[in-house]
Length: 453
Image 1: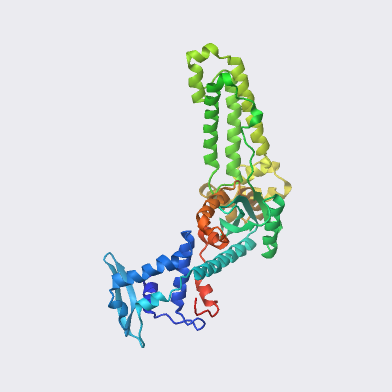
Image 2 (image 1 turned 45 degrees about the vertical axis):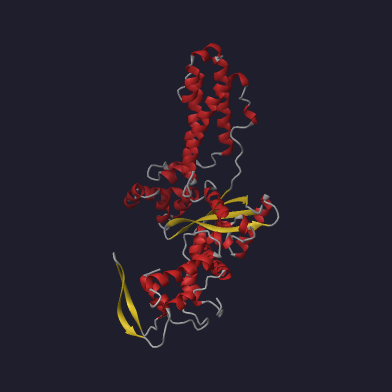
């Protein structure tokens, strides 16, 4: 809150709301403090049990008990801040009396009030998200489900859309599934949200879900007791490489293009390692290499059998990656999206050739492509070269992992504890996760007459 805002709240110079009889600034403070509670993922009762008593106690200590009970026949119109603190100036007369402590006590932070404020702000944020998604050329979603502390299935859906020449990720909605977590139930929940908010299915260009099978499972048949140390060393190296790949695939701003490049490189590494192993070259697996080099292992190890087992497993791993991450992207469109300045025009579909030729010879586009993020480059040129930009963005916009959903479930764990197991977390979750600010001024203006609030 700004110094001027705080001063107006303290001395009550803001005009009272005709509907509530409470200062508009006091109402705004109630909303702002409720938003802080939601952002901190705290219980709604903390407003009345901690925050409000703290404000009143601070007023007593900082302003002095006498100052808190003074009749205010004058007030300050300006507040300036310096290293030594805040300074009040521009004193004018005011008809009536005010009580600083009384004004602070008017800030309603009861459990029910905080809940209502959070619900109102969450609804406003949701409306802003829905409006932006509707205005976007197209959008993509990621979704995941998990159980909370009350063993209820929670569905979380994030959306990625275009707004003001940038790409944004926001929580679309969260919902407690009252039946099961089957695909049909999830589809029903999403369909109902789309229908209720009039979102177009034709604009949805990507859906990302979780559910990867184990990469190293019972089918590998690799572990055999005589070679336990060799096997453990090899698997340790493999898992180290997978952990490295996993780190590259994490992050909320990742996309299909980035993941495709990382996974393609990893699959080619698997084939490189297979060729090296068949040539009895273990240098690609440091821990395995140390084991193999020990004399006691050389004496008992059947090298041919070992290399065959490892190479077979690497081939199985390659096939598993290719099955789970099929290359469904047209290579020519991929080249157009990632390097439009050097794409083979004749290899592109007829509908894209002329615009591709134009952008290839656009000096401004050449400059921007070298300087800008590739996805944002295509967003910028969406109106200039709509056909090829839309095709490129269909690769950049969709989510490539459920990272945001998984991160959101960590917030669910904090919000819904065993002491708050019956809480409907949808509004708290939206306020906690959203980067969009609720339009508090609009909410205060539209409030109905509830003097006790």
